[in-house]
Every structure is written in structure tokens, then in C-alpha cells.
Image (cartoon, rainbow, N blue to C red; front, side):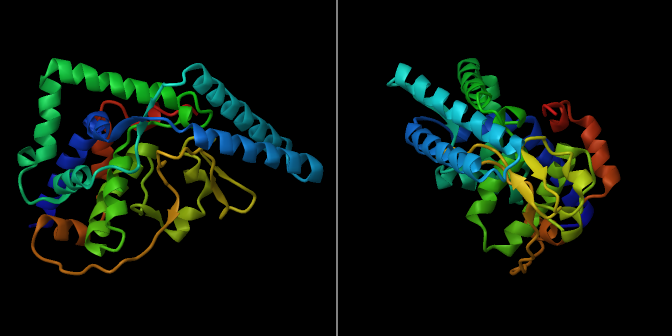
Length: 294
């Protein structure tokens, strides 16, 4: 496949993922309970606060943050005691391989995008009112639950990044897939921050030290300390979901089995130019940055 054709196909498929990310990720929503996690975390946070007060070396901001987490955990446990049989919706990290394979085939197949199982599934949902309304309700339920979290309320719940990471986690030793995914990740970094990054999933060394660019990510989610290399993800985890990691180090993984197909061309080509990414940014209806509470 020619590089220019590959670039056009990348933009087309990314745009479809972006415009339908909620419906695509809804395939990973399950209703579960995770109260054991909250009870253990409450115990850990209370112990941490006790040590903070005893040592008196922590800033007031750290102490206040710990107190907020304790209050949040207590509210979750009270909520559970009031609704013993209640299950809540989660965007599960552990999903069937069939779902991930469906994502993977959409991203990399040589077929037309419209011929993929994922495309046909999403279009069917949009054209079936009962199914459409039911899935929209699930999506709204996930957003409502996550907004109770002091940190996650500032984050977009449904991202292309998360779709890509389902596929990435299944292919951590596959250089061809990882390098091809980086072209999608690089596009999504631009949509997330409206800044032109060199990187895909992992930040380059120079990017990792650019504090001003990292500020483009949601405050409260990523903070940089006095030492710029100290980047801390401060989201409140649970035992079911896995949050997006935007600030991992770049790792070079060799590409094997290169052929003249879409995934090989995608893996070997350069990132899209800033002009191309800016044109796409303007075309998308709701850039991520508008979703962030800064």
C-alpha cells in the first residue's frame, strides 16, 4: 500500500473511532460491585494520614488530598450499605478476547472499513432505537458513577486512547502492532491536547521533560513536582477499570514480518504532519479539550 493511501485510511478510521467511541467502548461495560476495594483503600488511606500527621514532613495539600480520599471511600461504603444488592456499571479492563480482536481487525485490516464487524455492529446500534437508547443509558450510567470520583470527574470517560490500549495490552511483544498503534496514538494525543507531539503511546525523552506541554493534560490527573521527571498519575483506581496512561516512557520495539499491507505501511511510516492533524482537529465536532474541567 502506498503511504499516501495509508495516511488517508488512518484518518478515515480514526475519525470513525472518535465519532463513535462511546458506542465502541460500550461493548466493554459490565455491571459489578467493587466494595472490597473501597474498604481496603479506606483502611490504607487512614493509616497514611496517621503517618503524615506524625512525621509532619508532608505539605498541607498532600494531607488535604488524603482526607478527600478518605471522605470519598467512606461515601462509597455508605452508598453500598444503603443499596446492598446494587451493582454499578464499569468500563471493565478485563474483557473477552473477541471484543479486542474486533477492535484490532478494524484498526488494521486490509478490507474496507465498512466491511468490518465493528463498523456493521455500530451502524446497527445507531439504526435500532431500542438498542440505541439502552446503550446510551449504560453510557450515561458509567459517566454518572465516575463523576462521583474527585479525580475521574475531570477526565473524559470514553476516549480513542482507551480503545487503542485494549489492543495494545494484548500485543505488548508485537512490534508491528505497537508501531502501527503509535500512529493512532499520535493522532489522539493531538486531539487530547491540541499540541503537536512526536510520540505515540510513550513520550520521547525530550517530551517527558516539557512541563508546559504536560500542563495540557487535566489538572489533578497529572502533576509535575519540583523534579520534572516526577510525573504522578493521581487518579483514584478501583479493582475493575484501568485508567489511561498518557505519560509512559517511549520504548523502541523492533518490527518483524513487514509486508506490503496496511498494518506494515502504517507501522513503518512517519507520524502525520501537524497541518494534517490540525485539519482533522477542526473537523471533529467536540475536541477532547472541551470535555476537560481545567
